[in-house]
Length: 245
Image (cartoon, rainbow, N blue to C red):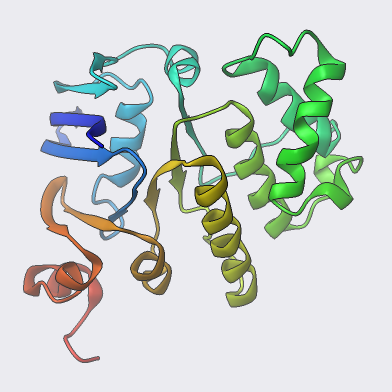
């Protein structure tokens, strides 16, 4: 299958800061692509550009359509969803209604005609992220790891073809991280999702990603399979630490 998403020569300036400098990125349909690099490398800025932040230069294409600078809701309804590093659910609403709201907002299928339909559609999504037992709880009552899974559920509820995950495992324990990895593996099999993931847990990146792109100071430093990237001298120097350590 061909490219689902193409970011072509993306640059983004913030005042005098060059956050991205002519970055090219291709995400192929059905793959999990990892995006790694040190803090400040431009990873989240690239996510923001894909999701509607106008670049200083360059273009974003999704399924061949130029979506550069479209409003985030327009991009979402074309089939791109993302999570955020800071989870901000509707705290007073139930877990189920948080996901139902995303169902109504996203690529709403014709059979979804109101809140009751959206709630029913939310149930299997909550089950897929292991939150079905908490669906009536207020989102404010969730544990940190549960809020991470709710963030994932809300993104899934919009009906994406491409899912962007921005450090969805940050702050989790080893056991909680493994739980998310297993959830993502199951979702990939069941939904044929394409995933672009920012992640600092290198064991996770090397396990779940088909390819990896490395950013450093806003530039693309390396690209390839996990094994190839892990052995890249410049990547080791910039991000992974001393070889053999």
